[in-house]
Length: 342
Image 1 (cartoon, one colour):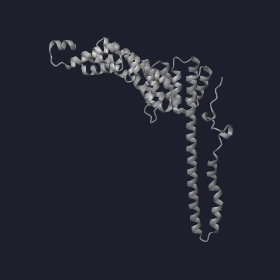
Image 2 (spheres, rainbow, N blue to C red):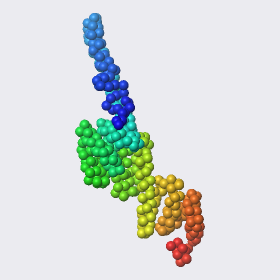
Image 3 (tube, one colour):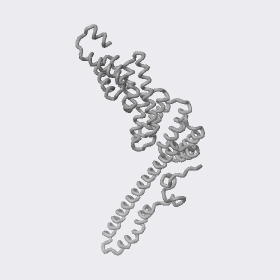
Image 4 (tube, rainbow, N blue to C red):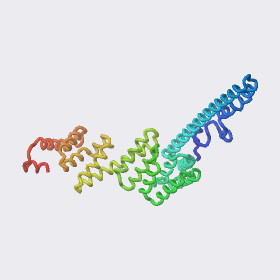
């Protein structure tokens, strides 16, 4: 089954045109170009019949100069309009193809979508195709089609050749760090930032089990995605996975006595978890216990109050809160106080 892009989304054929008509010059451009030609005989005749040849000669060149400026202005406006229309078509096409890649259950439709993306002269299309090639869950035929589309893009647009070759080599080597370095070097120093770039970098960090770094890049992707809405569900799922992994890492670090590192993991996860998830994971109690181990009792007490407020294991939270309140109210350095705090 072959998908068909809406006419306004096809970057190869402007809306309302096809074949040789699609390649014809705009009417406004032709009109602007013909203005000086049509006016030249009239201006020449005016110059010949003028009583003062010098004035007529100056007038002729003045009018010709004015007409030239007007023609140039019209041409620039037309060119900018066509360029803007082209960009709108590319963006529309990419959204259309992404929808097929994400939502369609038909492998043939997905293959047609990646093939269409290979025709787009746009870094975002390049990144989407790389996402498919580097996605181990994608079907082999789909990944091969995305690989072929990248090679076609490399052939048609030489400015992409070196980065495409380098990225495909890094994917073939299964080297997430190389992929990250290439993405950062080639896409993160541009004025325009791409959702796909941050998303891919976050996913590569997850493959290396560096979940704190992955979460930071996925948060960037989510921020950039507010305008484009490219990978909404995918970004949310990966952020949720990172949060769970950070909690797991925090638990392991807590058990081995690395309390500062555990606190860092819990804190990172706490910024992303919804209230229901915080309750499920008893996050405030985790933080309170960690603060206690670091002898930061005021912070620990604050976390127990938050736990009570959000109903996290109420009985345990209440007992710990009372103990911390009593400890904070006691003054002195007696052996009994030190023992209780320890």
